[in-house]
Image (cartoon, rainbow over all chains, first blue to last red; front, top):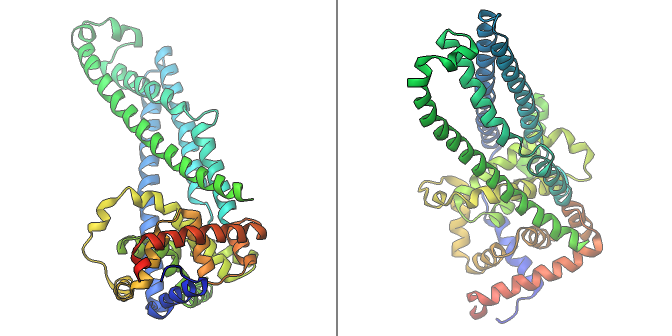
Length: 212
Length: 169
């Protein structure tokens, strides 16, 4: 048979109906419950972990600042760090909510449009590369906050101390590039994956638009 | 809430064939199809409160199923090890076994898998004998474009079938 008639295709396709087994309502309920549980557990771990890290850091900053009320530079360092952490956390939560709250009950074109819009703002918007600047800044400020506090000296005195100039500076020279490289690698990888996803969705959307 | 869920399960139970077929069209491995089926049920439940806003239950289920599948296609294509997952229980296994025995259906499915993501959905709706109005609503294009697109997709599908062993069938 060289060519296949349209009706024949539909007839062949109809066999899927007769050959598929149906799940019972109980099985469907079980399926839904396990998926919902799986999803909720994943969110609880992700959000719970980020809340715990955030609260832990902010608590540390408050305690450390209260113990060093006379060291103005140290207070500025901690305040800056606290503000950045707080704003990043709120932004992270709202983005997470937006992404998870997406609904699939639109037409394919409408859904693609909404998805492309959200991803475009994240990946190509005004603040899309902010994390690349914030990450080293957060690392340096956190390092300073912990190091100065543990050295039990004033902010400026720490960097003039013998211990810093002879020992700590080597640790800094070795570990800072490793941490920064690891962090940047993760950020770049994640961004690349998201950009690929955006290109895929945009391509589908464009094809639909070209049809209209 | 409980009666809501009861009602929801009743609807899904009646329309689950759509979920199977969309998963069949978008995914090749049994494990992916089963995962996708589960994800669609979950996404349908999430958007169930908005069901009243849609014109028909069927269109709502098709739209959510297609959108969910497309959002997963990219993710799943990166996880090739899934193809090697040995144990896949129940329904899809039975269905695939039966389809495998049915050569023409298997070839048709192969040809559909070679279409792009949009043509897959258009072809599926065409094979399901949906009206142009319904296809336009689900895909979000105009009615006149539905016809053009169906013809184009059919042409590619038939070419795919010719290239496969269907030509000798």
